[in-house]
Length: 140
Image (cartoon, rainbow, N blue to C red; front, side, top):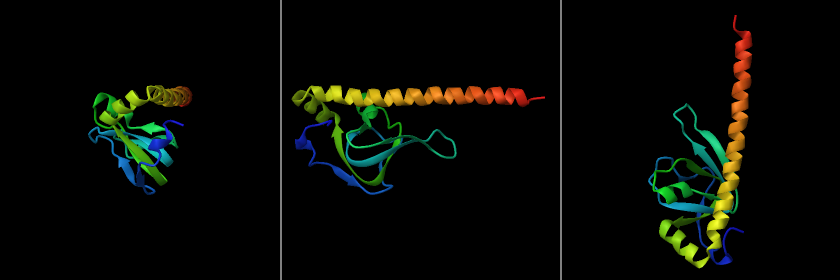
């Protein structure tokens, strides 16, 4: 479990399809998923945004904006009923003072996500390379 039981009774609820945060919004809080699943989307200017991740209970999102103060880099939407615990920077620092291992647990969750994203990038690079080879073979 990512956090102690005392925090589990808190949180904010969202319904299916409801936006929790939007890409380019100003930073505010990071969110810990207490119940349900959340889709993370990125709009890169193409016709359709693309799905980056689906996160479940005990995962964290929105932490990049909390750490560096930059605008949100993605949009988060609820899948079904979702309950999240918003944690602002002040609350995050206070939580670290009460439970220093909290930072380690968050870093482990972020490490898992980075590993997944790197694996996806490697797979996409392989697909692009294969497509280039096929296109090269079909040219006159």
